[in-house]
Structure formats: C-alpha cells, structure tokens
Length: 104
View 1 (cartoon, one colour):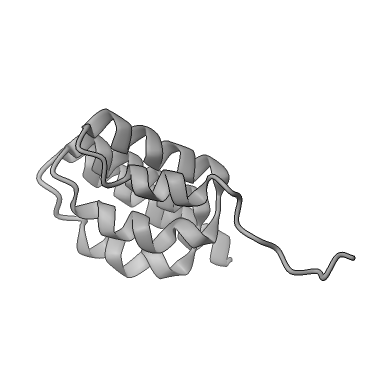
View 2 (cartoon, helix red, strand yellow):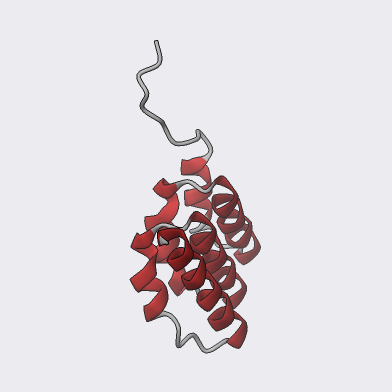
C-alpha cells in the first residue's frame, strides 16, 4: 500500500520546536539533529534560526542548512555572511559551498 509519497520523520516537529527553546544548548542540539535528519521540511525553521542570539546556535544552524543542501537556504545564508562572529561566517561560507556543490 505504498503510495510513493514520503513523509517527514515523526521527530521533525519536536526538533523544530527545539529551535525556540530558552536554553541555547537545546537549540544547538535541535539544529544538529535537524541537520543529521537532512529533512528539507526543516529548512524554513532553520532559516529563521539564523538570527539566534547565541553564536554557537547560528553556527550549527548554518552547518545544518549546508548539510541539507536545499537551495532555499542560499540567499538567507548569504544575507548572514556579515555575522559578527568569524566562526559563524566561516561555517556560512562552507554551507554556501556545499549548497553550490549540490546544485552541480
């Protein structure tokens, strides 16, 4: 009875909600989990999290977006290239490179 339609993993809503947790380490872990899932349904939530006040979260969000490789993240990542933290800028550049590579 397979319809050929794929559904997001059941954990996706929980991890997306974790991006708004008051604890920055929980937000960090949520971003990491979303990147490991490589679920395109996480892209919009991760894009919003590029404005997180914690630089470690922003860095992990950029990593996750690069890992997912969805073109929707390209311009928002470019927009955040001027992040005040060098490590975040570097991760954003790596994410942009990965997205470009995915596109061929």
